[in-house]
Length: 256
Ligand SMILES: Nc1ncnc2c1ncn2[C@@H]1O[C@H](COP(=O)(O)OP(=O)(O)O)[C@@H](O)[C@H]1O
Ligand SMILES: [Mg+2]
Image (cartoon, rainbow, N blue to C red; front, side, top):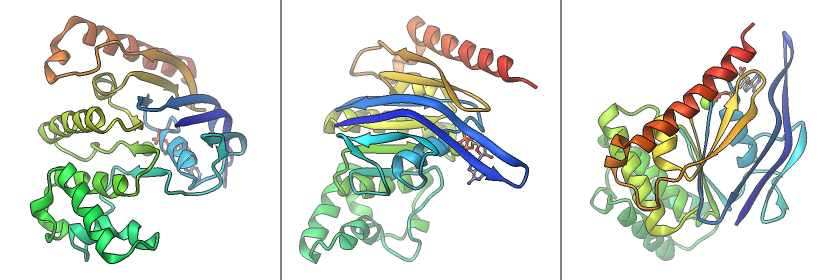
């Protein structure tokens, strides 16, 4: 898997005139990598992920997955959003099966595949529950199972834990890291939470605001199998400080 974002610009036409949301974005994600983009609110993070998902088209530049240009949504890219996007009237199992059904997979195979991924995220015993019966963290695990069941080449996550309380967020971060390690998936996550990005990723793109552009690319060398305790180490805090400084610097540069 090779995701390439090359010289991407995105401009929105608003009643107040053109708004440049993203300017000259160059990024890549390789097989098995966990990459984060961090930036302040309004730096174009969601726009960037929507472009990769094919929900929006760039004004200029190109996005490719294994050399194929992204021209719309596709099963090769699985999305997990911040807000809960499960269908409330469907059971957990039906929610995970939904995309497979759209792909035309037959019922029996669909059921097996969905069960497999509910097992992967540790929710097999909740397959008949409705989303409203689940906690926020569990809903996001269902959303992850639903995305993975489609066998995407890459998982795209837009602040997936942003709506969770601190304790749930921390356990979901550990859960996701363990899942990534176990399944060898490729992940591109967007977040405004610097410590989350440092804890999870191998590389971080730091986005400056207005227009969103890449201020820096930082490699995180904290080892492959990270436990929560890594957050109490000196190198961890050093990375967080470095990225906070970059964000502060870019904020200062773009202040009106
Ligand atoms: N569909 C749209 N039309 C007009 N402006 C938009 C649209 N989507 C996003 N924007 C603007 O683009 C900028 C970046 O937004 P967004 O990507 O949501 O940032 P972030 O996710 O980092 O908070 C913001 O100024 C936002 O108002
Ligand atoms: Mg956003």
